[in-house]
Amino acid sequence: MEPEKLREIVSENRSLETKLTKRNQQYIFDLKKALAAANLSEEEKTLALHDILPVLVEEQKGGKTARQLFGTVSERTEAIISKPQKPKSSSPWTMWLDNTLLIFGIFSIMISFMALISRGAQVTYGLTTLVLSSAIGGWVFYLMYKYIYRFEQPGADRSQKPGMFKSMAIIVGTTLLWVLSLAATMMLPPVVNPILEPMIVIVLGAIVLAVRYYLKKKYNIVGSLSVPRNR
Image (cartoon, rainbow, N blue to C red):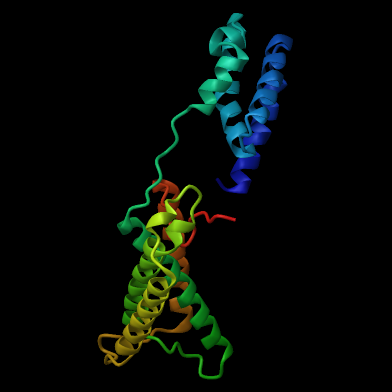
């Protein structure tokens, strides 16, 4: 969640708490302590309270207490902790898409910015090159994850991890494939590989990054470039 939105919810929670009866204030105080002891993040605690407080403020007008509405503090804490989480999407397709959008966005903005500060002020890569190289690069990073990096995740079965020689062969081979594909697309004629103005490419890159952010939030996509590693 965006920090600004989270701050708004925190502010709303504080305002609602001032409207509670003494008994309900004590309930919320005890609930906060229980949630903190359960090691929930600040965002999770804030959202959990935001689910409760508006209902509590409204229902207490009729004499109802927090315990009557939500059970004991322990029961409510358990309900919050065990609340089903949105499943994460980590299929090869979604990982490849996430990688592709990230590479396109960053690469497009980077090369366009370099073009703007240079004398020629021209992007050296055509649109087809950017798209295809990003797509291939996204698949290369997924293969690196599949054969190497996923075995570094906490709890991974490392017995299936390829040996060092095979791992290096995969890294070198996939990287070479990426470089060759980039070089090949650069030889395409301008009619199928148009070179756009730097500012246009920057805008395209920013839009793609925004789309990636939206998709990650909406579908809880786990990219192969952001999986947790053992420390």
